[in-house]
Image (cartoon, rainbow, N blue to C red):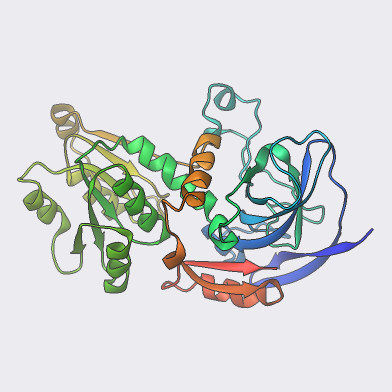
Length: 343
């Protein structure tokens, strides 16, 4: 049997390569030759030692080409371009069985590669279950297809926000997730207001389709949103920055019958003050969003395949697998979006 390379995180900022055995797929498995794997926050945290899970086979934003499909696989065939859903769920717990598999109590315990735990996309090949493989358009750029997973997360968030035509929607933060929220909100027919400190990221917000840009370092965004909405406040606010003070701003700038969505996790998890009377009297909804469901992943692949969402501005660099150390060092810089590793 032939072998292939898998990149492992062995320790803090220590990358090693493992030779894995290339196997033929079982009846309901698919062998994928990896083309592109983007480095997400999860991998960055393990690399930096914030999450100590060693050895760790990282990489869960993956796209490639089917090399072989099992005898009972119906959805894809050899030669198809595909994205892979790697943040898995158990299928047996209460939440999986009532249609909320994104809240699975045993989720993300992946051992895709034989050498270590983890999703395992930083590799030359992956052997995965057919149910986790999503066919993409023949003409899609596979580096774009690799961003199906982060887009799916944002699809789930935007659906939770229940945007209606003509709504005033605020997106706080224009990292990659904020940028994707902007594009999705525009597709839903909203007027989108982007709040960000970095002028360069405000330019990205403009390219993503934001109608109004607010530099939060130069003006009070809560006051500005009130002015823009005749004192009402926004219909929907998405907070995509992990800072509790901005979570409070999101609540404060949301108007009556508005929806406040905490997209991100917060570090540190500091509590914020909320007026229960404001929530009571305004019927404001404060909710969160975590992980995509299968249907969100499907929607993301359709949006990318049909080119309704453009992620070309959100790929900061493409790095060969042999230089994965450099890819991680670039990924942890504050001014980059996605770094894509290409075996």
